[in-house]
Length: 196
Image 1 (cartoon, helix red, strand yellow):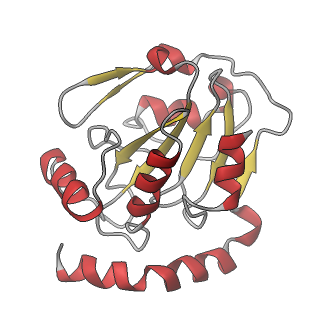
Image 2 (tube, rainbow, N blue to C red; image 1 turned 135 degrees about the horizontal axis):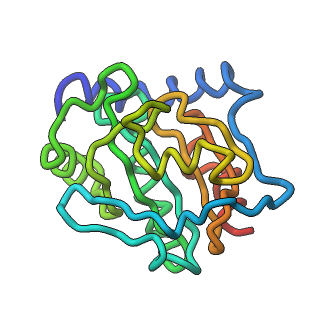
């Protein structure tokens, strides 16, 4: 862990608190009407940073939490919470991290460097996708295109606003909600959504 990353980890509680105050009204969006997607997320796959591929159709029956991540962000300590969440709900939830350099160039490393950093500093055992772009653009990762395009997911247009935004998909492939960076992985909001 670099000196910068150590400082970020030490400052994380203050960063989280400040972001929660700032973004109180926009912290999350929930699919309260249980709108069914127009296009199935199960038609997509995730290319992992180790060369493997996850076919999302093989995850039917489990909730999926998609998170865009970065190694040098004020929210990087959320890897701890994501790993804890992954272990706590391993029977019904899979978390997939999507390293991206879209916000503040806070993910400059290669796929191998990112994987080593996450394993060594946070014990990350959940899958990490190949580094890609998650913001709306021609290069946007197909998973994040589905998550942020209502013509595909049925209701949500919200793309990630910063690193560590979270999207929860139900056991049936419905987008349940969007949680911004200020919503901690171990928050009541996320745990309640996983348990519903």
